[in-house]
Length: 558
Image 1 (cartoon, helix red, strand yellow):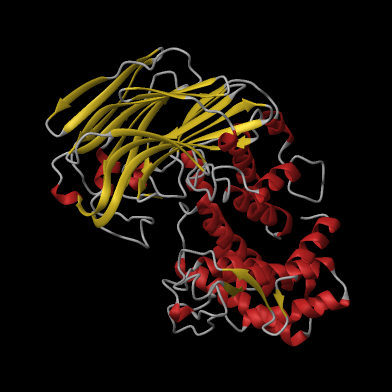
Image 2 (cartoon, one colour):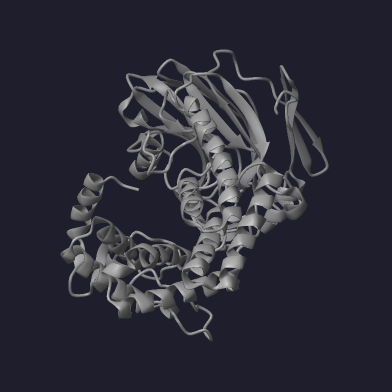
């Protein structure tokens, strides 16, 4: 919960974008998923969910004028919900007033959860301030949102929506005195807990953008549900969530260490920084990090751990997350993953001196954009990572569902990039090249990377190092030039293997390569035994790569 001064400041900012005629908030069009609108034809739109949030904040602030404006907004928002049970979009909202549900590029069912939560909290806490006719419509809207959530019935692997849907149906059922909805919400929360406890962590793992949402939803269940059972489950899940957050936080850089299942930016956004800062305050009315984990937000202790992130009996494969931290840097990696723009499969942060932080993000780019059809496999020993890329024949370009290309596309450029971001743009970062090996100095911290296997039908890799507006680019170029056709189905070979280290003065470790049929194994000897990856040399389907690419973890990992 925001303090009153913060709330008033936010309201003043939003007020400048309020359209009194439409009774909704105007925002620039930045969404790229689900909407068919384009910024060149609709640079500014009336956004429904930000308007719902604005109405909630107006009611929190109170006062006759604010309440009247909130009521006007809520009338407009509720009118945009699909309340026809016979339609496929029943119970959800479009993103924008300008774009009805049937005009969208795949409507977003999550809108039932997001709007449903805010509307039920408004109905629960502020109904006496609003006209009775509007309150009745809010109750109806909450009911329809709950029905949409039940119909969709998201599984427990979809962490924040699994939790949010449980909250909306549980608290909505309590508000509406609907035992069927209340019971569904409790069962959904119990199912999510059992699933998560079986893994030991959230499957939507370590997400700077979505873990705070999950914590907020769990906090609302913990503080507002009438069910003692739901409160107890929420308390256990909050403990698990905060443990995940706290031990990934890196005090020296102020970074939320990787790897990240999903994020909208490599550096923390202001809202994410504010969430962490507020949770570390002694505010009994707000969301608070448990006392037992608070020391992790300031301790320079060395941390090194790995953990599974999937329920293997469900997926048929496992994905491990490894994190290493010391007083200067944090480095995290997954054992597998698509290289889409919301994922961080290999991610580091370095304290570069004078309060500067440099991020180290691995990317695979098609024409300068993160490329979903590149599949990462890796294994980490402390400050070293051995990793590879395969190509998928059934995936997308910029999104694995909304932009399917199935290994057939036209492009000018494919490349692997280590992007040194954050404060790197304003720092001197010397880079030395020796063949396929690059070494950079980030402050007094060494970064090394080498391509040790380049087995591809596109010809040999070449190295390109250049400054960009967002930092320093250390690139291994696969193909570049004029636009051409790419067909992954016809490639005889396409696999690249790299070895990487961060914060080590000694040379990169030797990599032993062995080929057996279409498979290649890369092995590095470590102080805790060998670490290795085994991957095919030819493109395959995404599921095949996830199930059949193999890793060998060092023995010393948990």
